[in-house]
Image (tube, rainbow, N blue to C red):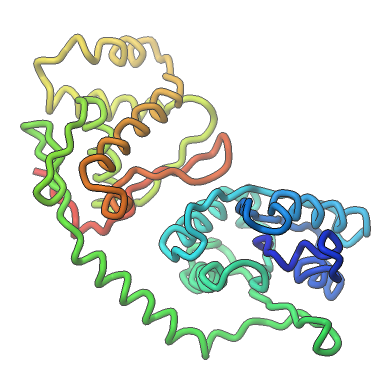
Length: 311
């Protein structure tokens, strides 16, 4: 498994093949999983580079199977965004607990390389066996080999980065969710949410407090458990708005799951209100974000439990 990097363009830019193809030539793998994030400013768009690597690997008989997925990162230098995106992606791997994974960290930004290491060391990647990490020796400097990554020299840098991130999060304004008023307040700012948007935010904030993090929504419909929770929250904070939750009440009564597009539209409006209230730079820490592939999205608020008060 590897993220696509600019060096992987290979013959597309009249160069020898990059790190991923070289790694496959150095060692046998049954399958390759390619992860790419579009960069339209690159000499060759990364989507095209990914297609080239995938086609070359299959036609050359280097692997039997090849898959590719777009990650859609906003900032390829943001450790927080990258780590969550990679973890969510790996959580969605169907054979994660049965296959032996090797991750090549030679392609991608330095921040991506660090996040691969953090993911491998955290124990969150696999219930059975952590992935192996390799870097690929460039053929220009002698015979190419896949070199196992040794963490001893990198761990102090990783620990420092984690400490800085933790300290930053301690300085963030508090999230205050007033259940009686049905009000979301971040620092001194009241975010004017609709009743349903308020219930959505409460739902994901409670997951942070419980330490369960992101929630996965698979397929095209909301789970009955989620719908029941939103109904319960709406009834608690907005008891006089009974007609507003009638559609949800009828769906639950009939056992009809609502389309997940209902949630996506609500979160889009909710996140815009937070951004309009706080400004883009501060709002990024409080948005309900989504990551993952189509049909298997992960949603979460990226703040620490110490930042949230529900009363």
